[in-house]
Length: 193
Image (cartoon, rainbow, N blue to C red; front, side):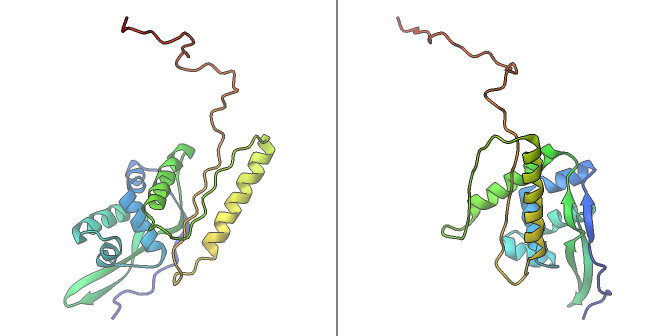
């Protein structure tokens, strides 16, 4: 028996602006909890079971995500005198305040890739190129559209899939900008003589 009315649909975006929110999204465990909740509402016990966490640990991380405004209680029900809370995402997308903070999400994605069972479906590719600012912006927009298309085509009953994109301008070795440390050009010393 559900004790609460049906939940309001999630907001389109939640903007991470506080230190508490930044701490919440920087944890790999909380990243994985958010992954579980992408499939639909779940209780603390259900999250703990899916991620092989202790219930107390699951509760701690879920409450921290809730206090940060990244997830919310969408329904409750009484089970043997105990109120179960069902948690879901507060928004369809989490927006980080600075481009460098998305590096945390990429580290989480790489950790998930490394933890994936051997033999699971995957497509990993690295491509280097030199492109104009206009082409860079064009590719960035196309990648964003592809990510949006993937999100919009999600089917909760199907197997999980993650797409992590890092499209960036690396430090250019041809750049004439001075480096922080000098390059040693002399032969190494031999102190054994």
